[in-house]
Amino acid sequence: MSWQEFLARHQVGDVIEGVVTKQVPFGSFVESEGFTGLAHQQSWPVGARVSVRILAIDSVNQRFSLAAV
Image (tube, rainbow, N blue to C red; front, top):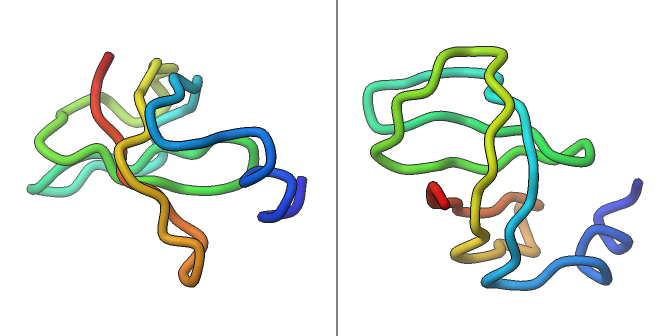
């Protein structure tokens, strides 16, 4: 899926499914449909499948901010 297709399918407020790819002190990175977003202040194990809400989309850098549902 291209970034443009991702933007056409999703908007701020949508709930998406993803897989945790990395955990850092300030949150967890979640990959969904080939793109990675950061869920601030979430501590999920790498490999976990999670449902998250899109809080913001950064079109220039092709990433998004997420929150636990």
